[in-house]
Image (cartoon, rainbow, N blue to C red; front, top):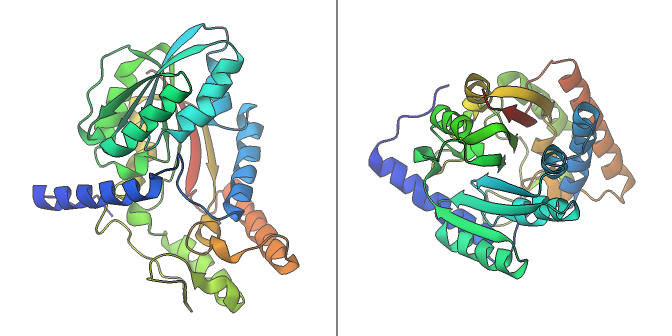
Length: 312
């Protein structure tokens, strides 16, 4: 399944929808909303990252990489309200007396302005860049660190973007990302959908309430394998994320995760789970354990990954 051919009208329509959706999502907050159970999913992912790299997340990896430096230039791509940069990276660097000049690129001017106000409150040198990242151009050899947290799956021109990132990194610079390399459109691969459908079929009704995609929470009997890219850039070219990064940068770490578990615990069905309830907890542990098995044995493709890349 290739990326759809987009004429100017279609591209602009999707871009308008993208801006409106994320402006609503980030207004007055630094992160997108997620069900409480998602934090537990992220803890398991962090365990896998630590086993592979020695640190638990993107923030700690960046801090370890620049340890000993007094000053660094950091660029965030598709940063939205810049919560990961301001709330995650900045405190880690401050703890080791490292000053950061932070630049963040996003198409949403209002949300970047919100981030600029927050950065000013925290005394962080911040530069907002309102730009369509599909057409990004950066000064060569200008950044110590480039990060993209759950952003690449919103971009079309991944080869161009990865090439520009490689050029923009300094010789010892790194690109660090967490992203969603699903089938385009956030569709499931056939073998993944088979597993998800089988598990979903036997779940009690209370776990089948969809909390998005409908005007109000709605019971669904079957798990729909839905293309979310029809009116937006959601996973518009996500199949090409990993190939593009590997083609244009040098891979240091690749930590695959979440073969299918996100389908039960993200914002669609995740609000149905309360881990204080014995049944909910048992289902969570079963799904996470089975997911980990499918990842470790390479039976299913990952729907999430942590990656670190150096200049090629």
